[in-house]
Image (tube, rainbow, N blue to C red; front, side, top):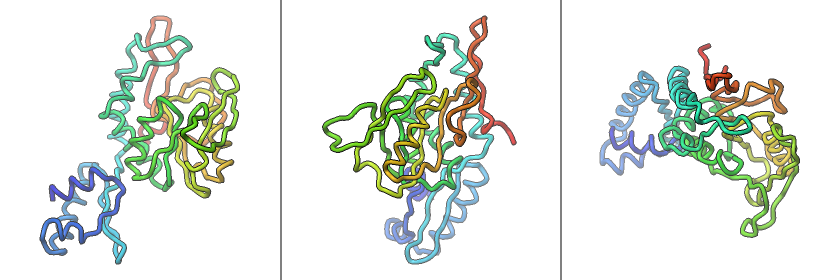
Length: 264
């Protein structure tokens, strides 16, 4: 059971044929099935995720990192506690988050949270914008067992032919550009966009325009932090984990779990 658990937890959403474990462990298939039953009960009891068995010749077993609302909220509360340090406030009203989104412990938990919220989206690829969103998107891609694709702010010769679109930043109101190699996204792909920060929604709006050029569908948008203002964003379909409402005159940082993380 330890060996099977190790394989499943280290490769979320990847389907393992039962025959692989039969051969590896040199035990009967019935024993494997019985042990998987115990694992399934333990995972559900302690809210670790789900162990799903698929029947048929192409079937097998896989681990789905589906976490309960309480577990996700605990992770978010821990991050919020760190963000409330007034020294994190940067010019322009942003928060310093680089250390948090560079922490394997935090980004793995965040990736699992996004995989839980977007479990029904079934993305073929996770998309992010360079630079700070990459760690979050990478762990989300790992949780879904799909590739990560990174949008650049300018063309690179090593990327080959590329598509570029202009967009208006929701925060600075400046016209910027985003670029993606032609071979990065297959037409018809289902795309999940993950980013670290959302203010006005201009970048996310630009992603919709860029994916339209690739004839790909944006099936979800997830961000770590959104600002409370402006209330009306340029996009309406997204999920955030943390809401940042600014700072008080005393220097208090106003962050809290978002409405998606709050108890139902």
